[in-house]
Image 1: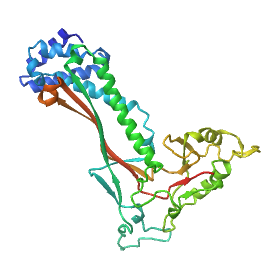
Image 2 (image 1 turned 30 degrees about the horizontal axis):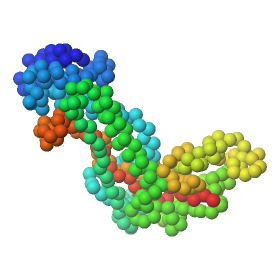
Image 3 (image 1 turned 90 degrees about the vertical axis):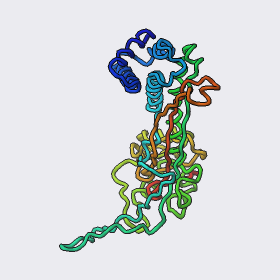
Length: 361
């Protein structure tokens, strides 16, 4: 987009809209529409040309905040941030339930309080349906956190036309927020910081979900034993937990990647022994997930993460803008505008029964 074309296009909107704010928004919507329709690409956009067409050509350098420049620049930078976020492989989000939250600390009623039904229970004619029993145990709390980064557009960046650099920074903001979110989730799933479960240690003998010793070294024998144990899991009232028929997730450190690959794909076994000639009964029976945040080289987890852990979403990736000319930085540092990407949420377990930890040999 050339400066003269930008100016002419905007002036056509200004003639149709007497309110400058309405004209600015209409122009911004038009340009973003052209980008979405791929009639122009973001790589064709120059912040310098936008500035010259929307600000300089109209003699509004001293009141740039009232022009369409901050709005259209913000729309473009925000779209680049979101694209950077979307392109990051968010493995963690695929392993948890995403639950909207409006609290700094989310309070979740423990699932143990739900359900009074058994195969012998029945609601007879004219009988009242039973209500859900209030939880017998405490509520689960998940602390939510806010994080974000700012991209600043300075007069120098416009004058020297550093559009590519600004767009690169915006993309990195989106990708870094996605990476941060993924790190929070993946570290929570292995309880790296001992904060995954509000009511105490997530993985422990007392919770019947943590085992150690030679028998837990990853291999065919250990997998058979632990998968059988997982399939037979019950809650604290002795009720069967549905662990069928889906494949459980096997989460492992990088050190076990090749062992996991053989366990998943080899026809013969048992994997982990000298005489690997029998049928590998673990073949195809699990979904492998590499978690790079493991500190142990031998530990592994098996189970249903999605029905055990949740991401409390106060807000997903959101973008905001602040006009630099109206701020102290705008005056002192020649910041024309600032654009922020932010995520607010937290992760935790609300069920201790569906994921099991094996410390390995």
